[in-house]
Image (tube, one colour):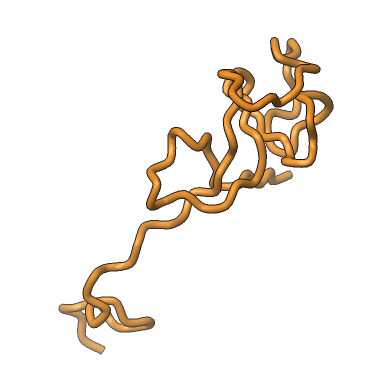
Length: 99
């Protein structure tokens, strides 16, 4: 079985130029991402560990703004393309190779 995780991280850990849209709330204690529509740290997270031996210390607490134990989870965007578009052409052969 394959588990898919988004390329996401807490807002404070992603450089501004690599931040995408907010996809949820990241609990800094248990490392799980909860959906934006959920108001409390309860139930199964959207992304995170399937089996946790002990519940998170903040289980059942509301996601109140300003709390230090959670941050918005944002998508991490891929690295920006090169400044010179002539160097990056789709399906172009690598320099120094012959057909």
